[in-house]
Picture 1 (tube, rainbow, N blue to C red):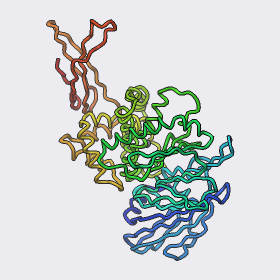
Picture 2 (picture 1 turned 135 degrees about the vertical axis):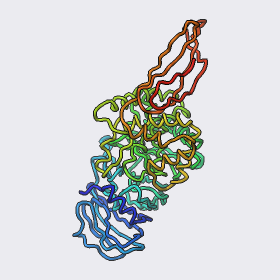
Picture 3 (picture 1 turned 60 degrees about the vertical axis):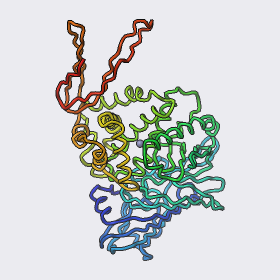
Picture 4 (picture 1 turned 30 degrees about the vertical axis):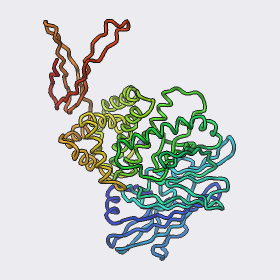
Length: 507
Ligand SMILES: [Zn+2]
């Protein structure tokens, strides 16, 4: 199997403009395989050779503009399209594909409780090819039209609203322009709870054997969903970009959740089957908020290549914690972040294996996940939070909204993100990014308080490190009248620490 390199992706993105995938999946062909027929409409900007990816059980037919392609040229996971002429093309690929038991591609699960079978896709980041033929890279966005044939008694969920046409045939509404890795389908005899919020259909789904547990928590799940949804609409000028918001709790899921547009999948351990702590409920709410942030940052505006995956995750991580704090009953989430997540980042950053938050280059899909660690997630999110403090939230959000407006339904890089933020502030965001995102290791800030004979005290913050910081200093009085001797905030000072020098902060 060939992994896609960044050079290959750049060459193909220059060559192709992909318009539309029409995908038909037949899920009634037995326990091992399903049938996948795909028509891709695209434009070639020049005469050239290229290829489409696919990992079939059996490649049955491939037609380019109605002419059969030689199936013997198929090698590994690539079907060559040689001698492509500049202009419009239509590629049809007819294949059978294998169900997966590893959570990659089209996962198939039979519930031991009741014998019911469920299928769902997980296509990040190159498992699209296990389900349908595709130009599988994030910056070749297209419209997806999907039809599915499913067994009787099943329902089918997808990115767009689905409709049962009768006789087990389902059709999903056309998506807007999205990346291949974000396409999603879930099929089975789901237990579903549905509602509507501000005219948008909301659904939560799980396998039938978990129905009572989902029903018990449905109010809480919808409340968190509504609160986050409303808060994001206060922050972001761009409205929610898709036609519905389904959250499916699926069995044997490898990750915590996946941000498929309009159909977020979660591990179904989040449907609690026994008493849990409030911290566990907070974690679940955090994942809901995190995935919803991706609807804008990740799905509406998508990374151009996998070297910016840390930014995608750090942004959702920052937004998730911040939005939960602002909009839900979980108001202490940053404490949780400080204790659990940030410590992970500090730890990773002081090991010999540390690396900059933003990697210089990721050469291929296989190496994109190697740096996915405490630096990418925890330090990245902490650095973004520092960026918000340093810019001020108003300018940060203005920059984010510029970013969404500039790159909606398209792709953007870290450089584009920094440019968008720079447009909203006088501050030098490019220098900030160099100091925080291209370097390794921690800065140490040490507060030193000295008292003079006249009772005045002076606070000095010693700065060992090279980065600019914006910090808040609280001045407190001890409430001696109060038996529990509480500290009472007298004043909060927001202060800039420039690069690399001790900075007297006043009295
Ligand atoms: Zn994420």
